Image (cartoon, rainbow, N blue to C red):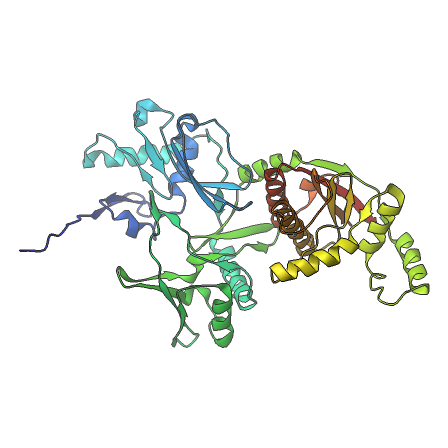
Length: 461
């Protein structure tokens, strides 16, 4: 008996504008869009949706998230509420109807990197459809999606160089998304793999290393450090091996989660290409952050700290190592003048318990007052401010999950930043990474039914 087989037919119809040969449309027949997705204009479909889609008719939406614990999400709707997007959300796949039913009909259209539509047209009518598509891009935008915009080629080259440096320093994350968009299809991953990282050095020599069945940034960093003559991240690939489905290879860049600040902009990798946030994304982020209560507080006067420091040094006790820390002075001042509780003593016990439960130390907070724990940070370095935010998230999670003992009432969590700049509201801070960190903190705090607050002081030198 002959073994049953399935035959899949697929093809690509290439359509080139004779008068403008640089304009080429590729019509996918069957499943060829899985192959075409590597060569098409990024976000072509999503960009077209901005000019022609009926937002209220959204039936399906796939998004990537840059705040909170959720990385990706696919949502279906009976009735979509217009402008109902989350802060930190970037839309990259939608299914909905066109606004102009006369031109496009009343059927659903999928917009992603490419578009999928069902039209009763013969192939000889394709040029007419292409002209309508091109004309639509010249129309005003009728919907406003938070999304990523692709970086230009020159900036992308600089970012590739930076990415290789970051990887050798062990920075960034690497992983396999459980689902991704390919053309207009949402593809799910159901298999486990063994991985081999491969690269060509500057002389064209092939290098490789077995990674086993897990892939982490440490192993990749070690491979790149051991081979310093690898000078182009685009020459680094990862081979996937599975006994049932065989082998395939992907570029390392497609697997990286690595935000890089370049100039005044922050860039992200998506499917191996560099992107930045559009203005709509930033508007939703800022709108969410503005909802957090911000209290402008007293200044940190450097001359007053210096006087306190001189006095502390004159009466220094054994083991007193905080004389040079402005946070120690500022926290003590707030506690003495306002009746706040300094959490230094509880910090030692929590650190000891935390180290027993987890292989790192946790600072619960700096000060406490009437149900509110507050983490204070004085720094002009955004990385240190973000680290303080992450510490606050860790301590709140441990407290609410009863992983550490905290016997005080807890109704609110706060961040207290002391800036050198004249900052009046948190959105005045010119750092997308910082604002994303604050938004992620806000989501976690409100998720535990706590009230988020932000205090802002200025450091006067």
